[in-house]
Amino acid sequence: MKDSSFRGIMFLSILFSASLPVMGHGVELMCVSEPSITVYAAYDSGEPLSGAVVTVFHKGVDEPFMTGICDEMGRYIFSSLPGTALDIQVMKDGHGGWLHISADGIEGDNGSITSGSPGTPEKIIMTVCVVWGLIGTALYFRSGTRASDASA
Image 1: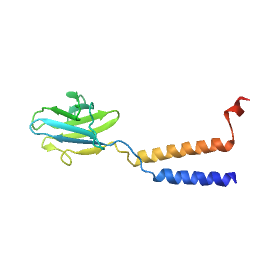
Image 2: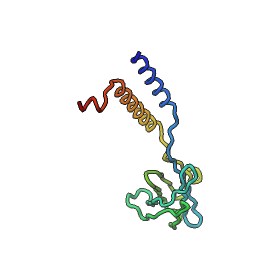
Image 3: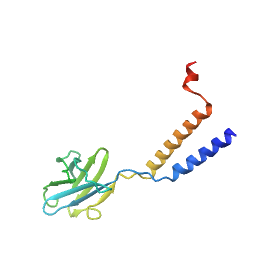
Image 4: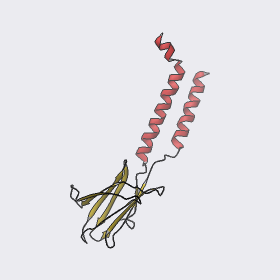
C-alpha cells in the first residue's frame, strides 16, 4: 500500500511541476536616439528599473567608455557621436539585457528588446531541481527516520 501511494504522489508531483509556468522578472529595454541617446529600462511588469547600472561600449571594444545609473524613472540619457556603433548593457540585481546601436541606427524592433525570462534550458533545470527535492522529501518521509530516532 505504501509503495503504490508513494508512486502515485511522485507521478502527480512530476506531472504538476512540469506543467506549471515559471515566473521570473523579464526586462524591457528601449532606446531613443534623438538628439541624445535615452535608454528606458523597466521590468516586464512595467516597474522602472531605477538604479540599474548602464554600461556603454563602442562596438567591438571590451572596455566601457561610459557607465552610469538609471534615474527613478528607469532612464539614462547620454550623448554620443552620430554614426557611432554602440553596445549598451543595463543590469540590476541580475536582471537586464543589451541594446545594440549600429552606425545606421538602433537595431531590432525600434530598439526594444525583452530579456531575462527563463528559456527552455532554465525551465528544464528548475523542473529537475523541484522533482529532485520532491523525491528526496518523499524518500525521507517514507523511510520513517526522525531526528529523535537518530539521536538515540
